[in-house]
Amino acid sequence: MTASPKKNALSNLGKIQPNQWLLISDVDDTLTGDASALQDFVQQVAKRQPRLFVALNSSRPADSVDATLRQVFPKNFTPDAIITAMGTQIRVEGECVQAWTEQFSNWPRAAIVNAVLSCGHRAHDDEYQTEHKASFAVPRGEAQAQVITELERLALPCRVIASGQDDLDILPPRGGKDHATLFLAKLLGVDAQTLLVVAGDSANDLAMFQVAPHAIAVGNARTELLQGMPSESSYHANAHHAAGVLEGLEHFGVWDSPGIGQRE
Image (cartoon, rainbow, N blue to C red):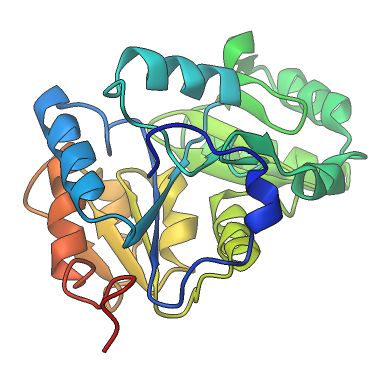
């Protein structure tokens, strides 16, 4: 976490120190939800710099997440990286990573949207849509199964992420919070087998739980995440929201491991 964006950030990629951890956390109801806990999270992380590199990973588009950062997060907080639109947008210290986004350039979004609308379901508001993510309200169960069947029948390349009672996000096959998490870790030079920790609260975080060696489900996490997360690498915190993320970081020994300048 940095106090302000750094210039020429992308020129320094791959130069994170060997013992620096990477935290990639969901935003809504994971870090947010308790203003006091969020303030404490920002303060605790700042005290332990430069031990931890902090990235956000949200299903919402960049503009929406930026608004939350301005309106909800402490003014002195600027994440080192932000993954948005369900893993289809990545920024590192304010700069877009074009190499990530360009791989989705030929995705047939319009055909996918038409297919879902033809099944009788409505799209989410425009603020939740992007060029490489299409979001809909489709009830769990048979309705979602019918949408998936129709997409398969039309041979449309996509990945479907379901969460909540009726949230259905459709992405390019290489999109997703998991793929973006691993890409960012590699881009930064982080050891994703040992020094990567993720945090979340819902089923749309499950994919990154499945690829990270350490995963934190905050105390208020939904059953849909708790039932699906890998038991051997996941920790269900007692504390809710940002306090739960801090609890998980302590559980996984992030604060206890040698920091930069404190190597064993």
